Length: 192
Image (cartoon, rainbow, N blue to C red; front, top):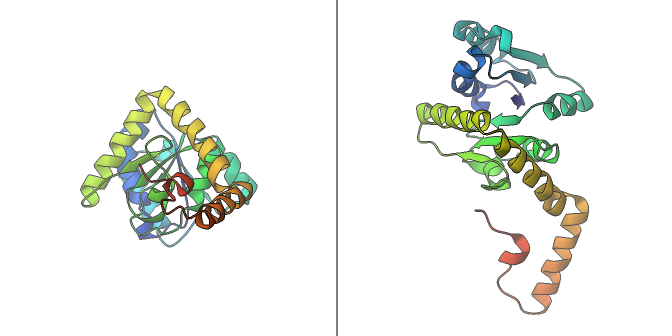
């Protein structure tokens, strides 16, 4: 599994560690943290406290091609942040066939649907940790799900998020508007 981003409290890397702890301890999972920030020391302490040091690697900031290599070698990307409005790393993971697991909030959750990733509903920190744990468990115990979601994610990025796809979409919107079509759902897609 992977986490990519600044190591600051609102990104939720600690939530991922707590959610993944039992899988890390049992040898079912390894986690790779790509990025750095003021929260790193706390996270390193948490890794030791949870007894999962041998299954967790902190890479710090690395060149983009190394990020892609590290991310591409993982089965999933976890983004537990509940204050995220972008989500470029989610698209990057999908393009690599890596399944995104995200908190069902903001930009990242809008980029995926039930066929291309896992959105984790939550009410508080405890429910988000448990939701992340369940999502990770589903992927570990259903490897075929990884392949299915990963392939669908790659297809979605190619069809909707490349520059060529965006140009085609804009062209279809103009054509629809000029022809008087009011419902653009078929063109813009809808969130499942």
